[in-house]
Image (cartoon, rainbow, N blue to C red; front, side, top):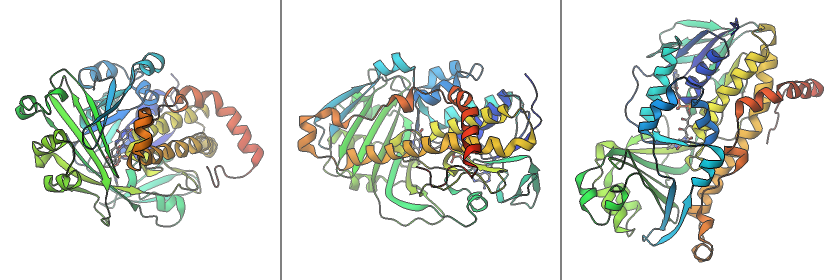
Length: 428
Ligand SMILES: Cc1cc2nc3c(=O)[nH]c(=O)nc-3n(C[C@H](O)[C@H](O)[C@H](O)COP(=O)(O)OP(=O)(O)OC[C@H]3O[C@@H](n4cnc5c(N)ncnc54)[C@H](O)[C@@H]3O)c2cc1C
């Protein structure tokens, strides 16, 4: 493969940053520096789901797909109940697995660690414990300043530092703080304790391998997944939350607060919450951001990807997938200009145009599913239980972002040239 002479700094080693690094490397860019604030990888976390559109990306990464196999969630259906525990419906994913390929769901920390190690195995330089405080650019290069005062520069800076991105200031020209969404999520993952196996209310969750169950109430939903043949269990409880958020948005969770949210619910839910180790429980305040007018800086030398550009509600089940697609498409666009630095602006603009409508259309599906569950009209649901099912749409899931970008690059470039103006103003 031809070596493409572009230097890239990527900030943030989440799924967006790691995918961008791995995919750019795959396309022949070797001068990559990945900077991550955390001093070490955190083994903590809970469940993360990758749709078929991003699960396919792992298939291109050496032996990684095989390494993922023992740790991924194997259930192929989700069983829905109302808050009192009355069974409503089952949604099966078997057909879509046959048609569109398998999904990867598993422990965020475990999957992240495999991807991180794969990036290291390629020789990508990753500096942990490096926090970026500032972004800058000139027409010829872009750069970052670390909190230690070090200045680093490259042809292109990719800001993949999540929902609190500092690069938004450079891209937008003003500070843009995330807003509380009015919702929070209690999240946990822990080894299945003996009480879950012995309790007749909960043993079905774990004793026959991996399972997936959902309980839907007014303005609250509670999802449980057992994994590794039932030996580990994860649950999330999304609920309305009016607390204000400032700098922190992830807090230690409190079991009594969860019990308060699900009081009078199915005794199986209460039993599960009661055996949850409090030190494995997190209270995650969901932030909201209006769609940005653009993802790229005025000189097109700094670009926002992943949650830095477009945070997703968990109910879209696409945040990490779209973060990965961003990286894949970026690598395709950079390969199309064959390392010609004078064409970086072209590649960035085409990348943005390819990504902009898709991510914003998919963002809306998260709101749709949350409203469909939280504001459910139960009279209508008992008549049509399948109305609780998750949206599973081919245009989102049966999608190859690499092939699509490769096929459309020239046309999008011509469209932009024809318009003769910056891309994506006003967007969706
Ligand atoms: C509660 C919850 C549940 C979710 N569940 C799912 C799911 O099931 N499926 C799904 O697809 N998506 C899910 N998402 C969304 C998904 O987690 C995110 O969209 C995705 O992880 C975004 O990846 P990212 O790499 O853009 O950002 P992040 O994962 O936030 O990574 C950003 C990285 O940048 C680092 N960083 C931050 N600031 C700096 C700095 N100044 N300098 C250097 N480094 C910095 C951080 O330490 C971090 O490692 C969920 C989100 C939430 C909030």
